[in-house]
Image (tube, rainbow, N blue to C red; front, side, top):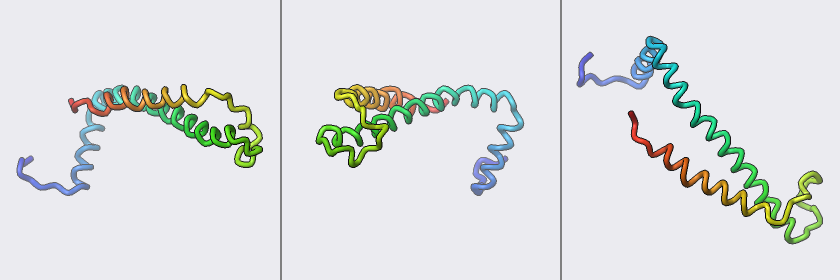
Length: 106
């Protein structure tokens, strides 16, 4: 393999697949390293969706719009439930996500 050799995108992808499938230990190591980040991102997205849902319900609940914008199963919104979800989601976004995405490559 020449160092100054220009490769197309497809050739680079073929070499990457060949490298991963030729060494099963590398594939297993990459899977184990990416699994915690994947699980954390699922938890983060669930927290974000809950926060967005509560933020959507909050103005209608405070303004007493008579359930015009709310579904019947979403009416029982506790009064101070939005603030803890906002704090939790913002802390999850600022600290662990910034740390996990700013790590230098090995």
